[in-house]
Image 1 (cartoon, rainbow, N blue to C red):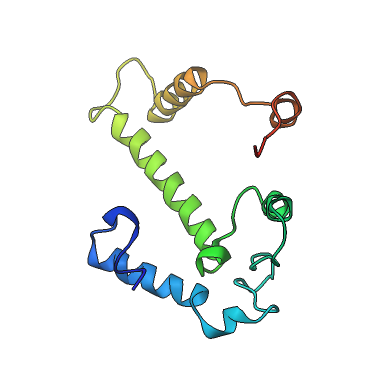
Image 2 (image 1 turned 30 degrees about the vertical axis):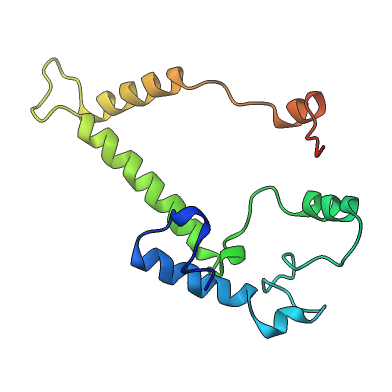
Length: 142
């Protein structure tokens, strides 16, 4: 019922609705009423015990910053597959930027790719020092 009457009607594709129904079977399951029930094989994801507001906040803070595929019922290889697909799309984009005719002046295709990559890297902002930012701007749950 929840999968069909989803929040705000944002899921309109029949295959997405079917996927939500499959995922929710792990959450809306009679065994989930047992205190020992875990939503993931690793045991990281489970329903916390009843308690005051702070206990829930502590539970949330202990969850991994980047969720693992297992929280969605997927195999660990799903993360690897996603990274491979992202890399493939990026390589396809770079190759699509190359000229279709041979470059003159002895510039090889490899050199053109290196120049394009260097230009893209120069445009990217530098990486954040996550540790320093976390100390300066801690997450607040109020």
